[in-house]
Amino acid sequence: MKTEKLNYFLPPELIAQSPLDVRSDSRLLVMNRSAGDVSDCRFSSLGDFLSPGDCLVLNDTKVPPARFFARRTTGGKLEGLFLTATADGVWTAYLKGIRKLKAGDEFYLKDRHKADFCKAVLLEKTGQGRCRFRIKTDADAQTVLDEIGFPPLPPYIKRDDDPAVAAEDKQRYQTVYARQTGAVAAPTAGLHFTELLIEQLKLAGIRFAFITLHVGAGTFKPVTADNLKDHKIHREQFSINRENAAIINASKNEGGRIIPVGTTSTRVLETVADGSRIEAAAGTTELFIMPGYQFKIIDAMITNFHLPKSTLLALVAAFAGLENILAAYQHAIEQRYRFYSYGDAMLIV
Image (cartoon, rainbow, N blue to C red; front, side):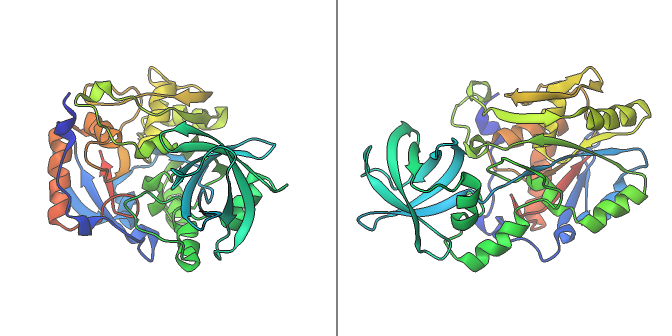
């Protein structure tokens, strides 16, 4: 499939730069994939489209404050995205502005109030903007990030190092059910849920199951290959335990629909599905779902609106049909929906 078929034009002003005051006030475009028709409502009315016994599958990954700022000893600005750390204080990160740095050079990590927090020394550049450096403090990575880190918002959401704005993003660029720290991006389809909405759905007989998939930095990697199949998709860690696998299997056996919340939950379910059953598992997935893929377990999907020519758009096109998705996106643009991470949602049934 030609990657260009996943292209569409989005007016820049429709890229949501901030969340709504109430999570569930976001709009919800409901698409019937067999008929291709769409309707407009609010996410708070999600329950109107669900039935007792349906099972929502949520990704409980948690996003640490992985974005940080630093300065060279000469004063030049650096901006980083934390990826991993070893016990002895060696970090791997993306770091913008290190072109003039070489192995052995020192720089300073800055706290959220723009003061120097600690020194670091560059060990090596590993290519594609990544590097390894040692931080000169006894504190572990989580402690350091709690002092210096900002929410790792995607590049289309414009942010500087304003600590007041970061405080709001820290709360809102996180699902209310986030538990397992490890992602560098939020599973944004879940940002629309409030604790109240979850309780209302449970009272209506909707089941909830949780998986974990730690969204990796590769989720932001654009597809540059002319043919979609030539794109190398990112590898991500996942887990689903026996308890949650049993919830999903019971729902399926009793005629309920399995409805993943987001493309991340979808990839995990399709990775671990054995026929129409789910097996408890943990590991990594490189499953690339694109048009032509035969789904095993899911019956509907909640998702946000995705970037043109992205692997995420390929996944929803595989589920709903490319023509249906592009028509729904055009409808959303005409109706002035808000797009991407802080934007509105779709329910595909």
